[in-house]
Image (cartoon, rainbow, N blue to C red; front, side):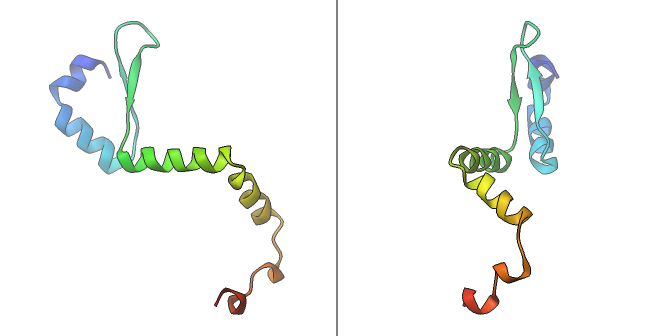
Amino acid sequence: MNLTSFRKDIYNVTKSVIENHEELEISVGNEGDGVVLMSLADYRALKELQYLENTGVLSTVLDRMENETKDDFSLEDAL
């Protein structure tokens, strides 16, 4: 979507992005220039994922999920 089209219907476009959890690329001028509109909830989730990846937590969790056994977690231990 170009900036002019976005400007004409900013409220409805923004509402749709939020409700449908879809990003929207808005082009400005030259090809490759522009911005991305996304919901705040999606942005925060992306930032959290980035933090978990940068700190190594994500790879640890994924590794443990991939290699888990039945004895890795006990409900009694959690209480």
